[in-house]
Length: 285
Length: 307
Image (cartoon, rainbow over all chains, first blue to last red; front, side, top):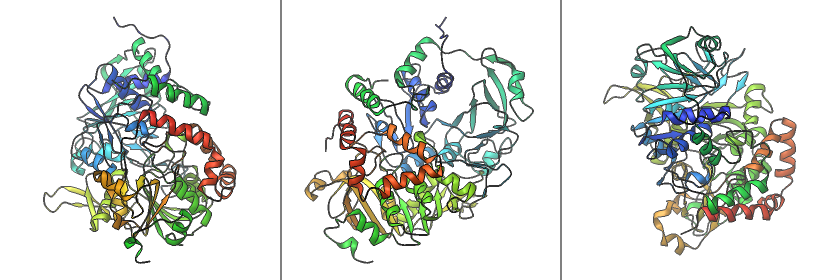
């Protein structure tokens, strides 16, 4: 039996759940933060041959330090290929990326994601909350062979219908992706702080697949705005192992993504961290 | 403004380059992507205050958000306007949500389809087809995106219009005085943007002799005949990173973005860091050469320059 960890943070759990979605040998299009930590963790555990692709045009980075942005220098450190943004996305449209990991402020029962704006009492032109926009999320949702979402479970975020579809899930139900001409396979899972949803391909709807230890399916349903269906047997999520937590804490030594490390990161400590990594860091997965 | 691209020596100060090419009402596009940014070009534009700009970028940060906050932007075409890990695009938010300082018109695409718009411009064709955007609400609120049927295979396809900006500005690793540009990391979409623009301003970490360019010609991503002006501006990307040159100054950027959270904080930042510094050298002095050099020293350890 694996040695399970007693002490871990929520972002650590999410990164571990993301890592489990990535299989060995797959090419994964990952954003910075939890998805990337998940990818790096997968490389260091069950998927040593997984390849990470970053939006700026970097493929296969093996940095000694933590990647801080999609165009960070760490993305090109020990990479196997550096190209342009449009070339990398064209490779994705051409079917080269097995899995993409994205997020949003709202998701609906068909797995459509919104990262553009929250209408509130207004509309697209005058929203109550303007968000950053698609970035590459629409492209990943359109063309990656499958996608995984990571977002906190809250009733106001898990809706019958999102205000604005930035990134397509199953749009209106089964077969609509094909009707609209989308090449990618669509969402596979939504990873949250309380549970994992998966999708019924015959209806295009998200259902409850598994819950975190101590969470009941009814609690999850209370945090979702549609009439949520459950799997025939709702499983309990396997907890993080001690090994997984140790790897994550080494990867993110300043707890920038797995804790609140950025708020108090001094320049001196940051430079010391970079120098330590440059001198002693390990770039083999 | 003819003839700039034919000159043998295109060196210009950043101040003169902005004054020469960036006019009221012009369409302005920025290269770079989450690094290799045009922070210093954005600062110089804000100092010179051209009005009613249309600003174009795939995932711009300072170049779009700060220009919006400075009240210089009429229209923004983009895929993502934010500072990623450092913080949100608070000026875009204030503008769209509350019309502060003025309401900007937005036209949205995705990162890939912005890249395709540059490619179409660089190829001198009117649009590019793509399988992105289909089924989403981007075409619902952007009438420039056309959903049609591919005439060959009869499948749905989305069309995005070419970008032909008046001026493109990008920051690169090095170039020569004729404007041959070399980059050592990813190129973002710089090679297409320079070709799509009517005028291209290059800021470079270093201007090197043409012999050096000829030694590694496969690194050249933009040939001289698409470039109008070159300016040697080391640290032009700070606080963002520059591949093979300096590491990301995330502690600085986080503090900067904390200040941008309020309108007052942003205006104070402009007074202190933009108007308070007459040029990029003054900015570097204010940041501190010791700090900047520490970012260079550590980056060289990770990625030694081999060219």
